[in-house]
Image 1 (cartoon, rainbow, N blue to C red):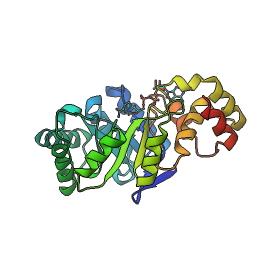
Image 2 (cartoon, helix red, strand yellow; image 1 turned 90 degrees about the vertical axis):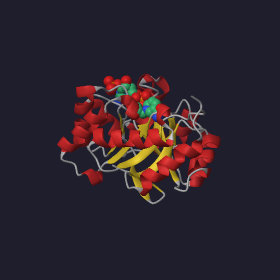
Image 3 (cartoon, rainbow, N blue to C red; image 1 turned 90 degrees about the horizontal axis):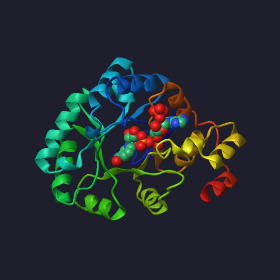
Image 4 (spheres, protein in one colour; image 1 turned 60 degrees about the vertical axis):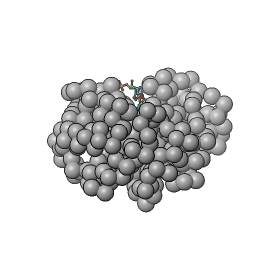
Length: 256
Ligand code: NAP
């Protein structure tokens, strides 16, 4: 596993996404990912699988301190009181004392951001959350959240893949030492059969999915969280640290 260092914290470059992975499928997928060497798991209150994520973490035998655990609070729970309650629910379901990164899942203009960030700050002060961040926030929304928070924001998790690169946000994250977590890094699986990616992969003995993931993680301050329920594809998605996309590859990818 390789790591990206953000604000002095080492984040595993590849994590396991768990959206649309319910019940036993989630439990088995997290267990196999941890066995394969994944050390970064992404879940959310909304995914209704925190219990299975927590159980798999406990049963895996991997020390809690080695796992970078990310969960998210639903956008309907962003008031101060609702968030404090939601966080306790997540901690209980996950079976942990502390969440590594707690993210606001989506912005909600009906709740003042100051109210939300006050709750986030309290969760950090009380030790329930190590790092805070947001998801699906524009640069402007991120800056509003940061202005309302005494604690520094660590991450913005957004849809980010080779066919949809947000250069402005990436540059912003790099300049401000903020983690950009690329969700849907395989464009929900569509990139696995992309012809251009397949051709580039052939130059390296890699698959189209591996090229898509390498493109993301080769960028500073960027990590990716592909979802797979299959141990075989989890292994494939993790096997992206032994090659590098050349300037020629990157130029071809830029024209996608
Ligand atoms: P994704 O990771 O881009 O793609 C997942 C799909 O690709 C699944 O259907 C998976 O099927 C398939 N797949 C995975 N690896 C493959 C491979 N090597 N070859 C072929 N197919 C492969 O999409 P995503 O699930 O939308 O995004 C990843 C994670 O990001 C989510 O699970 C979630 O944790 C997070 N996310 C966050 C937000 C947010 O609002 N913050 C939104 C969306 C997603 P199999 O399972 O059958 O392998």
